[in-house]
Amino acid sequence: MEKDIFCIGVSLKKGEMIIGTFSVSVSKYRLTENFKNQIIQVVAETKDELEQVLTH
Image (cartoon, rainbow, N blue to C red):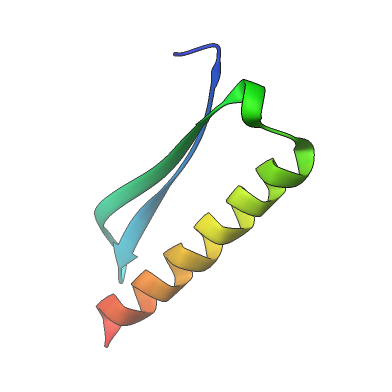
């Protein structure tokens, strides 16, 4: 575990099967609470969009 890095990761599912993952990492010195919340929101939205593509 890196103490100076913030990382958020998510799994990608097709149905109930996990078929991949992706993550975003950023140095903590660049991270504000607002930026952290933006990263979390964009990662969650991207996960949803990718899973929609995978199921169609």
